[in-house]
Each structure stands twice: as structure tokens, then as C-alpha cells.
Length: 66
Image 1 (cartoon, rainbow, N blue to C red):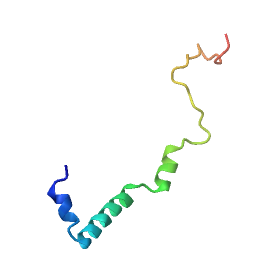
Image 2 (image 1 turned 60 degrees about the vertical axis):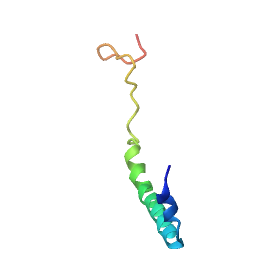
Image 3 (image 1 turned 90 degrees about the vertical axis):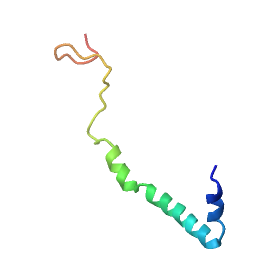
């Protein structure tokens, strides 16, 4: 699957260390900061969830009343 290229990476310790450093750097750079997702994903606390599939009240009457 990887062929001779992967075996040549581990031919020396220095090449193996550089390869491992690259893998670790890629993993470090690909994880987002906790602050980036916490503020953007949460809705404002005063907003209420509205069910888009609920029946709409007729002419201003309150939902659940006839």
C-alpha cells in the first residue's frame, strides 16, 4: 500500500524523527481552539426554540387553545 517510500522514511533515525514531527505538527494545527466553537455554536440565552413543524395558530390565537 505505501510501497518503498515508507520504508525509506525509517531508514535513519533522523528521517523518522522528522516524519514524526510532521505528523505531530499536522495534528496540532488541525485541532480548533475551544473558544472558536463555544461561542459560535451556542444560541443566545433569551431565544426560545420554535418548532418549524408545529401547526401555526389561526389569526393570532394562542397555540393549544381552540
